[in-house]
Image 1 (spheres, rainbow, N blue to C red):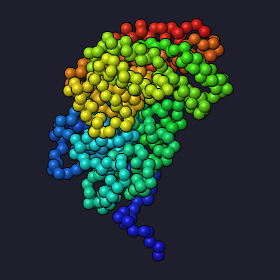
Image 2: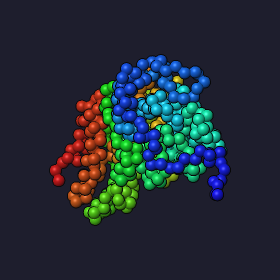
Image 3: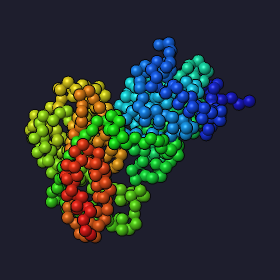
Image 4: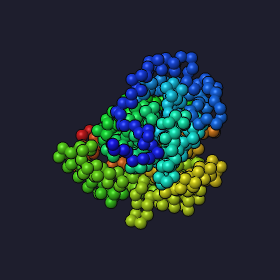
Length: 500
């Protein structure tokens, strides 16, 4: 008789099952009734009492969930343990997910909470919040030697009923490794998988790694729709489940006090003659591609052309002049985030470096840079310096699009405005998180005016600009100074809406 190779997990090895058998025994309607009836989830303080040494989910004694969070949790249970929470940046997605896990532990005996997120700094942020729920997570984001043996041992203990609960927080890149994937078959059927910033999981590589043997699924994203990838969005929603109501927009978050209100100041910027020539040349190629029947989702060539043009716009030379003029008049505006593109303003100078030069050396503004290469310890030091006034601001690039928590920032100057709806929402929502003493935020958005072009090219160009304008108008509508913001946008509005 053949035998399987021995390993710490082999005696309890579980076969991959598209739908764990315990699912059929769950009375979801009864669970919803129990959650809604009397207990009011975490809103009732001191609901549970445990020994301090136990590392399994319990609500923090001072936690009070907002009404939209409670509604989202109830609706996730109504959807039989599947769903996507579409909530604005800063609205409490992390707390909502941990509350779901806590309810599952007490209602059905959840055994494992698996959280996957795109970046290391998000793993650390999740770990901080998880500890408030009495959890001791394994963090899987570095060398496998740091987590593999411990995870293997604890999976064995879970499956032999020698461990009450297990929490794992991993980066997406660690999650798809062979070493992590090889352990997926041993995850207990009563596992909840949480995909943070879940839109990142919509690529074929990540979708193929999502485990079918984990039935309880929760996705979190302010913008689950993938840019130029309807197919990836559909497959992502098919795995995690439909968008759960209520959707919670930036406007909703401001009304509920989850985000602060803001003033919006569009700053229109002209291209230089050389930039205008390059812009028109790329735009003509875009028009040819569209005229040939190419579409953005299925044409790598068209996407490449749009990216080339976006990069040109992001580092437009006149944005530096606009920045110098703005900050000359607002040297006391602090703390401030300066959001740059990742391209060069000249052959040897990145926009990040040029902005740092203007602010630091010309205007004596106390700043530091904040990029993907900034170590975690340095990031924490920068945050403290922003709070205590040692720094007036930070100059950052793309690393602030997702998950970075900098609520002390009250002002933002956006030099690299994105046509990606997800980045557009995240960059603006990042600045609206509440902080002691922060009453409102101010957002200065540099918008490049398109140059004059031939009529046939302009017709297609205008259709592309209308989508961008719709986002700008929506953001102006939500601003406290909406009438002023509309007037500032009037020039570009008239250009886009003008006669053919």
